[in-house]
Length: 362
Image (cartoon, rainbow, N blue to C red):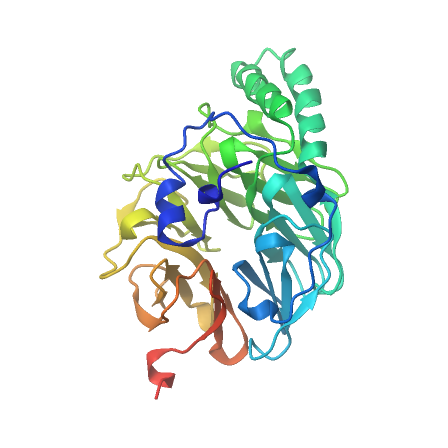
């Protein structure tokens, strides 16, 4: 089993320990039933340990531990549970429109919804990932490209490990084209809405198999961030990636990409960096009082919102040049979603929480 501490957005201990596991630690196989056992129904899904949240039109969709999927149609005031086909922890969720979304989680799970999160089907799991990795390794071993041949060894190791590795984040640029990333350099792509997936280890400049925590994109560019300063960029919709140099060698957990070419990467100990030229040059952001950063979201009017593990939210109205305190809650935050009229909802180990900006507080 992948240690719980590898779960990217789960508070201070998890964020720190996630970087302390060697990239090739020997796995321990979990009980196979969690891949095929539906999530248990619970009375208060909004109070469960939730790790990811996304907006699907006017609806909020949150995912979390033990396969829980929670829905809110009143901007987080009340929550109901949606049936989930798995009981593994779900770590991230993304919708491209009001109906089509994907959730990822432990044991290589990818779920898909075509009705705004009301129902979900499993598109991928660790057993299938292992089979894909074995086939990929055999193909790459015949390649003349050194990077691809090196990726074959990592793929063979993943195939031998079986269905144990978690996925941490998902990005889709439309209903057909998406990428999922996770522990030990795990990365796969789809061009048919998730009906089929292909390993893309050979496209990534990640020879040590470092953990990949976040993926974001805009237009033709896709960025992937991870541990030990890992930051990769694709300028061709994910067909190839190059490593970007940043001044920070710690882990990045939060990543934002803007249509203007601005990229902001944030992570451990309040470290955050901004590039105005698609990652060619970087400047450090001075965000006073921040703990380790966990998540970005986009608010109304181009506002960029950033959460940290201490429950603080910071906002930028100048495309990430500067961030100011926006709000704070008494709970660690693992993800954010902005609803209508500036309403902001966060999730974490304590469940879903409504976040009010300072001018809204009484």
